[in-house]
Image (tube, rainbow, N blue to C red; front, side):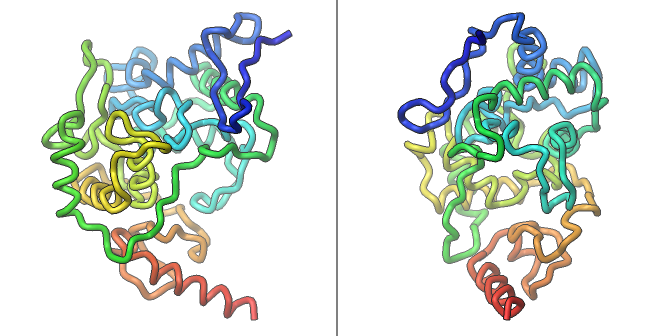
Length: 300
């Protein structure tokens, strides 16, 4: 009988299974290798990777905290239960393999790996193991980044600079350069801008994603239940970080249905009259209201 740690305890809050209790006969070696690839991606796939040199030096867990096991921190609890899944950004039904390669191209500003190779098999095995007890078609609470309420103004990069200086700079650096681990094989604290950071096609380049992520996870010691930043601080520091220079990468195939383009996607065209600047920084309430009214007219 498989040694299973409860993923939905009495509290109702999802918990990851315990990898230290994983046995070899449960495909344990492959799953552990998958976790290692998530936790220390750069060691294997970074600029000096032992398997390939295809990414920017960041690790997957720089964004998916503790190898994707922390709710509201880009966690992997719902991957196995929800994929394959249609996603409006690509306009197709995506497999887990497609999604992993998409992250490699965007968040790690790299290139894809063989979808049938050992490394891909290992990462998929790990993602499926993490969510193995979540019923198919169900998404546990915390599987997504938290959605912050819109504020009544545009996010302010100037105010965000003050937040960054007081609460983020000690880990991520004066110039957003991050901090390497002892052997410089990867980042303990990832670069938030610059050549080694995520590119303009990454999910965290969208303000709603970045603001929700930092509110639940940053700075060190914060959690979804006990955040440190206020909502406005999260919006503003997200604006500051995403105002800084980073690799630019065009994905012209994104959002084939313009009506479903994310409200905070900062590249046109759009089906509404608002500017790219407002789509990047807000205020988002007028855009959301306009779209709601247009949808109501279309239903009549």
